[in-house]
Every structure is written in structure tokens, then in C-alpha cells.
Image (tube, rainbow, N blue to C red; front, side, top):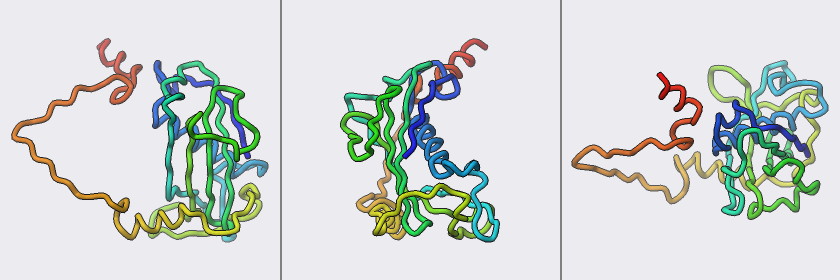
Length: 205
């Protein structure tokens, strides 16, 4: 397991509060640090047995945010903690759970992390050979990645990924066409559509 505590800076939230995009980046950064924890390497240095550079491609991601702890709670210059618990199946697939809390509030046992209390992230990754061309999976060198706890059976997210890929979308999704006799006007909203810092910079010119 890995717990990182960081200060939310202008690069994370602009002049506002944390957004879904910003939260996903926090989790992704912590995940990249977890899979190389203790190796002395960064995620860009993960290679397979033949020396080919590998990328931990995401097959499934999800973010659950409870109404009692909205992302807007986390604002500029706040200290936050991100916890990542990653496990592997066959050395090729990584299943992860993450939690986001105010600084220093992460419980040391991932089994106690509760998506009804704090935002939680889940992901399934597969190592693929980085670069152009067809997607090819490959197992990393043992020295290139952290030795994660093993999962005894394929993670359920792997089956979900296969179903989505086979169906071309989430099961139950429908293609719906909506026609309007006139243009639909949608006002831009701060933070949701335009980062506050960028909006203010634009308005000042």
C-alpha cells in the first residue's frame, strides 16, 4: 500500500476546488508511484524481459464521490492524502483501489476504506508495449516494478472490460438520436467548463 500527502496547488485546482479530472490525476499519479515503489525507478522506466518500454494501460476506471464529501471540499492550498492499494494477477494485470481524504486521515487498512465516507477510485491496468502499432501485452521485469500482493483469481473488472469491448459499450447502452428544430444554448459554468484561473485571464484581455 502507498499513502501520499500533497498540497493542492495551482497546477491541481487553479484558483478553485478539486474537479473530477483533478482527482483522477491525483489517483493516477499515486498509482504510478505505487507500482514502482521501492525500485528506484519511475513509471517511464518499466520494461519487459526484452527491454521494451511498457505502459500500464487502463482497462477500467471508476470514481465514487459520496454526497457527504464532495470534491469541492478540497480547495487550493489544502493538504490531501491519497491511498493506493494495488494487487496483481499473473504479474500482467493490476487491480487497484484508492481513497482521497483530508491530509492524514487515511486508515492503514484498505479493507476499512469506505466509499460512503470519502471519494474512492478503482482501476484495472494491463501492461502493454509502449509505442505505435498494434496493442501487445507483456509482463514487466521483476526489478522494474514493485512486488505487489497477488490475487488468486482473475479480477472481476477483467470480465467487465471484456464485455464492454465485445459489446462496443456498456451493456444496456442505447444509441439515441435527439433532434432539435433550433440550436440549443448551453451557458458555460465556472470550474465545470472553464477553469477559474483561465477564465479570469481571458476576461482580463
